[in-house]
Image (cartoon, rainbow, N blue to C red; front, side, top):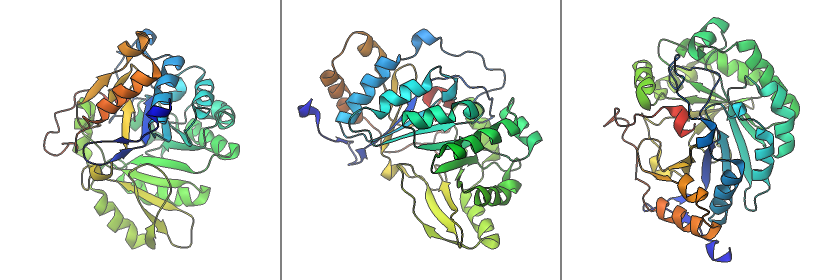
Length: 331
C-alpha cells in the first residue's frame, strides 16, 4: 500500500487527519438535543458495519494520513465487544490516538478493558450535576451511575477525561460555575458546547441556544481565566483557570464557527461517510465493502470523497437543512 501513503487534502487545503467513527446508532439515553424520548426506529444490526468492515475503513484512512480515531455513537458502549474492536483499531499502523465519547452510563464495567485495549482518552457527556435535572435532560439517565463511571475511568488511568456540557439557556446555564468547580476538584477538563440544529430534536434544542461568548464573560467575573492550549484534534478554544490545572474549552459551531480548520469526517454505523456535520454530502461505503473492495480501491474512493467536502456548514442560514438525528451521524 506504499502508493497510498499520502495525505487527504480537501478543496480548501484542509488536511483530514481525524475520523469520528460511530459504532452504533443506539443509546440508553434520550437527550433532548439528540433523540426524541419515544424514538425506537433504530437500524437493525444487519445494516451496521461489522468489525472487519470498520477495520478495513480505518486501515484505508490511516494509509492516507488519518491519525486520530474517536469512537462514538449513539452510545458506543451499547455495542457488544467494543473493547475488542478498540484493540483492533489501536493496532492499525498509523493510528496514533484512539479516544471514546460516552455518556458513562455503562463505563464502570468497561473502563479497565477499554484502557487495556488502547483507548487513551475519554469524553463524557454530562449536562447537569443535579439528579432531577439530569433525568429530565437525558430522559432515562441516572446521575449516580454516570458519576460512578467517571470515577472508574479516572481510576483506570484515562487522561485527559473531558466533560462535554451542552450549554442550554433556561435549562442548565445556571450550573456552569458548579461544573467548573466539579472539574477542578476531580482533575477533569471541561468543554462547553453550543446547541446545533441537527434534525428535528436539534432544532427544538435551538430554542435554548446560548452564545458561549456570554458564558465566557460570566465565568471571567468569577474565575481568573487565562489563554491556554490543549493537545487534540477537536475544535475547542481553551482558557485555563489560573492556579489550577483546569482548562475550559469552548466549542462554538454557531457563534464562531471553526469550519476553516475542520480536519474531520464522520463514518456512520451503516457505512455512510459524512463529509460535514451541517451538510448532506456523503458517500455510501457499505455496498462497496460488501462487494469486496480492496484496500487500495477503497483509498481511491476516500480520496475522491474528500474532494467533495464542503467549505462550511449552514446552520445559521439554513437550520432546517439537516433532517437526520445526531445519533445517526455520530457525535
